[in-house]
Length: 629
View (spheres, rainbow, N blue to C red):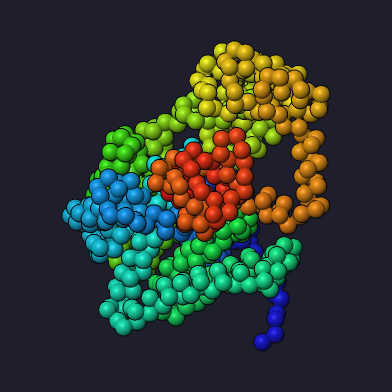
């Protein structure tokens, strides 16, 4: 069959969807509603487009829109799997005898227990709701209610600098477990509803076998020199071999899933993301940026806009007078089945924080909409229930983060933080990079316009003059807080440095300088300096002399970085480096002991108080901290 390039297709519907996708984030920004998920507005605008713009389009155009919406749905499930850190789940596997105390501190075990509790509460709630309305399948409806949204949970925690806290890790892992197990249960349930207990049910296990095969195969191929060379040579420009490989992995899982049954495609797309997530490592950061660009820039908006276009409020008429009561009870149930299991965190974090975490886990978005759509096609939920589920998804993904922030307000002046004096573009970039590593950052800016701009970016900022000692009292400056002086003016930087040293006797100060002559003045005060000219020259030198290493470090800073970990565990004292089982993504570079630095080898003995200088992933750092801390 020869390729035919025809121009008689109607591109008008594509123009409408592209316009909505482009306009939505702009509207949210102009209206200062950046905290509201973009997809809520995409669904709302999609509904308006479906009501007023799409009724006149042809069947061929609608098929194209539905195909792109399905592609967006698959991409969304793929990115959902890609969002989950498999290494973190593996690192949480219990390795010692489980006691009650160890159980409560293990995020994996607590997350599994919470999911089981949520299913039990969800089934009870479904039984109660079935007395108000007709629910064709109580079990399937229970699974719909038990879903959560990692895509909402992680950004909220990241905005507050809580992703690397114990509480943040607990919530993220609980959300990841809920996503994984929900999708698995959905797949088996949908297959059984459609085909019964058929021998083909075992075929679904082939997807998990494929997952482990690809996991090991990709890991081995990456160690082959030829593939490493080709991967580097073809990863940029027109080739984009890694992106093409990611698309290939998605299609392998999706095609195999289709042969098993179309209700299995959801699981296949999710597992493809999970498989790629477990093998990316160094490339993770750059790959996520590119794949997010493809997904959220093109495919995924089609899914949510078409969900809105297909929304039929008239379907709610089937509930008649019971509509309001049903919607209220459904909303209360959706919150209760997540908040009640969260009480398990009460002993570690307090009742209020635990309940706040439960409300955050109550946010639901893509998975609940997808599960509802599949249930509608299978006939296990009605049109009215499907419309109700879409309404609940919109409400929970908006309300849950608001309740979480209300119950557990972010106190920017408390705890360990980095204070940046001056709101320059360099300061904003530094704040974002520290934010990626889970560090709390607070900027002090005296220009009102610049203060508003930084605040609109979602960065913690206070309006004040860095030369005023009262500002540092207001932000509760503590001895362990780093202060970075970045006003853009060498003289003003020096004045602030002297104020911090003389008035507050603060020691952790870093100042930017642009003139070498300033270095001696800071050295007399005991303040660290960053010479911009020298740093720029060094960066250019590295780009020329070692470009591969330079690009690897710059492009993957979100995943691989350097950290210092102190040994406090007495059981480690006297052990040799070769006896330590460091994480596979961790590299011990140097050891600081007292005032000396040295490069370790296998025979080196470790001592309590040693500071290990590690290169690796955050998961590897967490694993090392558990072993030596």
